[in-house]
Image: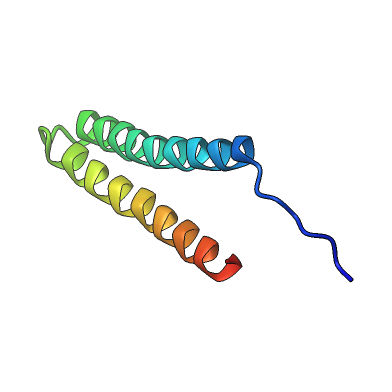
Length: 74
């Protein structure tokens, strides 16, 4: 008979915190790359805006995958 494993609230908090950090880093990285590309190509804010949008999509895609993974586990 397998033992019953109780969920650990600290573990859930750490997983949520790491997810939030992943989203923030993806957005920041997209903005930074876009900003540097804007400086190089002298295009104004357009590449930075594009970088923020791509970073946001990537961050929320990771959040979606995390949620689907959690759904499968339960």
